[in-house]
Length: 481
Image (cartoon, rainbow, N blue to C red; front, side, top):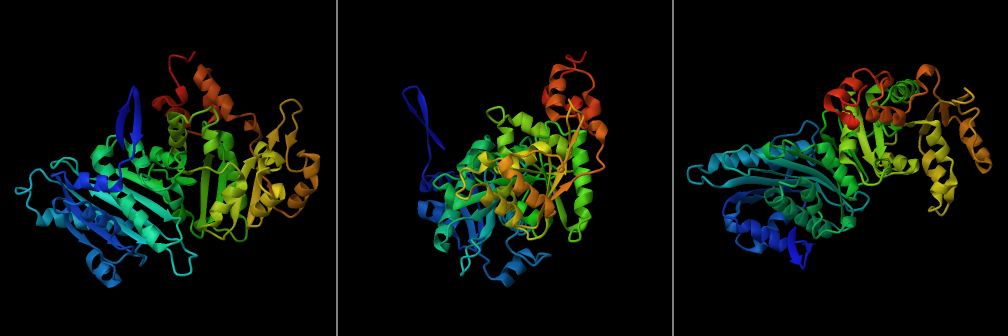
């Protein structure tokens, strides 16, 4: 990204792909290899065309034949080639060769790199649009250890040649960004789409590692992908590293809990435990083939205007500490979430939610943009093998427990509600801990910020200590009375 001045304003202008490749080529210090499998050598082609490539490219190769590829990089345990493990083997192998074949005394100032991609473009029937792994291993100081950027992409174009061209541009953006934008990872991520339309490509996972990125939180980079419209859903695990949703959800039963988790409370965990027991009791469900997800929507993160990244990381920190996989999505409506899950599995799905969220599902105003209205949404929602697990609500004034039996929906929705309840798609979560039903995240959050006592008892074990020790959600010991 280049910055030009016009009067007192700064105007961002995107460098053409050729200009980026040429700038890399003309840098006498940058030197490395390109290994591309599955879609030709589209990235390195841009560097050859730009001119001056002899100062940048030590080697370019494409081990397209599987036997050759296995002989060079080894055989994967799962026998697949388009995987993250394969990409990382390629990056390490090629970098090891550079170190082995190029004398450091002869090249004391060279910044070595290895770029690699392993992809599958659209198939002949055009039912599978293709996907791939792209990465770069590089150094920014000859005496420093290597940094690494790895990402996963899904093609949206329906022509193999166009997909190859898009991959080549992305590769140039990645190499350029690694060397010239590494001090600003957020802008580096945005630059992946320089000279690429968003409707051509989806990037749904990225991980940064190495000495220059030791302070980069990959969960925050994951959020950038959704925030910038690069993908509709991202996922990260308890260790804070980003996960590929397609890989985690493939052929799995899925139980999802949507919430603000600001912070995660005893109610959230009780809902999780009770709904999980009900889900595992289903005939078709086994714990070994089940993935449980704590999901936060982008609209929830934007509830107070612009996304507060510190607040997001506070929520993520607590959920990860509890050993949970977290998903951030751009799906405000539940049926879109279910459709997304259906891309990866045909197994049973479950949604655990409270009364308020269930009422929203039966509110027609959320489906006015659909030609078929709420009936179209419900057709998409319950066409799949799905069950909704409803957590009860205690009315503070009357003391009444609201369940599916006495829940009041709009008069026009009564028959629709009755239909799905009698068909066993809606299940009450019973045997809940009634002593905690008064706990709400928003109440706990206010108590933390105001320094009011007693909020610790509303949270799962260990969570309050973590909030205090890491000063999450605006906690300050000075406010505690």
